Image 1 (tube, rainbow, N blue to C red):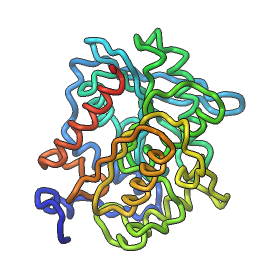
Image 2 (cartoon, rainbow, N blue to C red):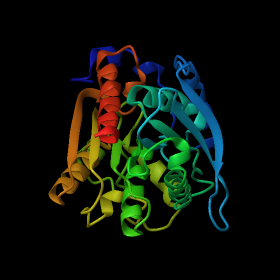
Image 3 (spheres, helix red, strand yellow):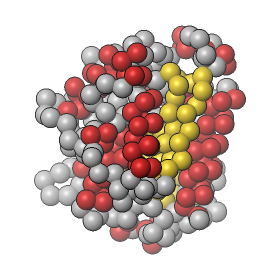
Length: 305
């Protein structure tokens, strides 16, 4: 593919094909891929599995809490990717641990319910419960309740954006920052990248369409499901938005960043040339190391400023 970073291109055949028509099988493929990534060094962290109350008539929510032994001033509620269908606390473990250590932050990684078994708003409700729990337990976590961020990759980035909208509208827990990495925000798939990137590595137009069918479950999309549909982006927390060049979701991420900017929200936007959706998992590539270092630096700055 013209313009693809050559260090990334060599690894494309190793990414498993997952069209999400068989969610159980595709979850197993993602779990195998996650296990193939070198395990993170957690010797400078405490890692604890907890359960968060889900609220009336809702199941409790599993979370995994990562705390730097050196202490942290702030926390991030971290939401895994996987198209609303795949991913869990274990597949996200390498990334959550790296974020906690590199950003010197408490990370509350959320094992939210997944579609199609549990369509919208199940995942968002679980993430909101985790955010509320983090805010209530800030002192016990050793962090400032005014320094709680939300963030995630892909579908997790979309959920983080939705959390920020919902917390604003419901006057819920204060969010100081949103970190949206290659976020999945728009079910309409009408942007240039969504229409033209039909066979890009790991994430294709058809695969994106399936994720939205599973997640929406036949119900009309609202801004809490697809934040790109929001017409009022004012009053949201400052944001960092990162996009991958060869990704169907690229332009919706850029448009959302611009929309927040025009609504008066401080935004940092980085479009990573030569990358594809999820390519930062290829840790040997220079561009991946730069991406991960920047995510950590941005979050550390947001939580300590």
